[in-house]
Amino acid sequence: MINSNAFDYINVLDKAADASWLRNEVIANNIANVDTPGYKRQDLNFEDELERALGNSRYVSMDAKVAGLKEHELRPRVINDYSNFSYRLDKNNVDIDTENVTLAANQIKYQGLMEGLSSEFKNLQAACKSS
Image (tube, rainbow, N blue to C red; front, side, top):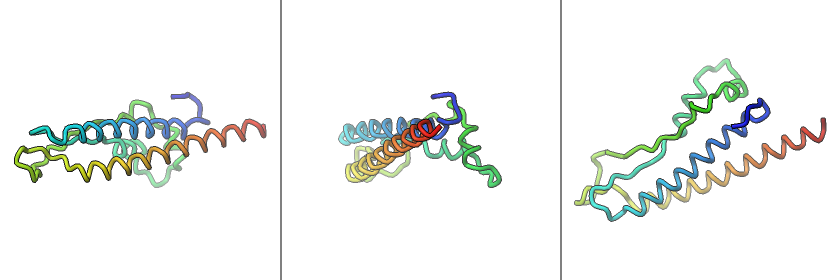
């Protein structure tokens, strides 16, 4: 993380992009284990961590909330889906169709985050040129 207020949003977008990349790896692992008996699908919990870190205060601006984030507050966690739901006799709860849709959605999210990062750097570059 870069330590400057000018990079607050860039730092958050960077962490979100890292989490999205990690989610791709987790989903790929689920797909690879679609036929493994007893395997329980995994997912990544980042959005809940980000929401918790930003807090619920209605009277604080988003800029202030983002500026107050600490790097250790934005740690994505891989979680196991131990729900009893499994339509298969081998107790594997990976549904290949769901995983493929989730992977596609996550790839779109990652592309959006990359575009957001690019836009933030362009804004920063424009601000530096006008100074």
